[in-house]
Image 1 (cartoon, rainbow, N blue to C red):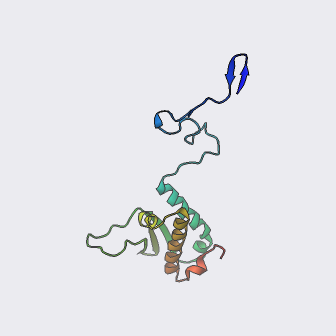
Image 2: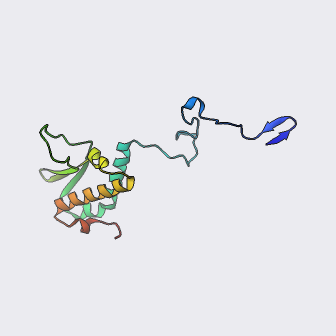
Image 3: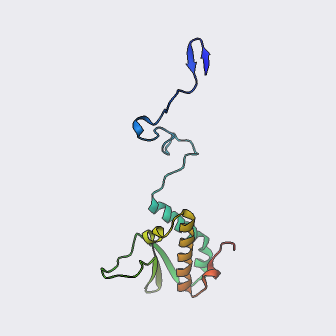
Length: 148
């Protein structure tokens, strides 16, 4: 601390922005127009999952343009199952509607089977590749663009 003519300068002692135990406040607490670029943006779990699926589908884009069968990828929260259902909850299904194949990914069952974000990413890759391989009658390994 510097003393300049009786004025004390420098940081104030104590916790500055966590009054009354409500957590940090101000421009550093939440992303906004006054926040520095280093503050991470908070995303809802649904939005994070959708972005992960979008990134995976972006990596698989060459296959979508090369394959003759039209495929839609849809993310749903959870499947509607009958009350007497006793098997494991499915992670995804393929539904055929005329010429269109619709791959339904179920976000909640997928995320509940994962402990970390790396596990989640790996499981989503696996589910998407398995379902697309089923539709296009290919091996999932042939579709996977990731380096081995």
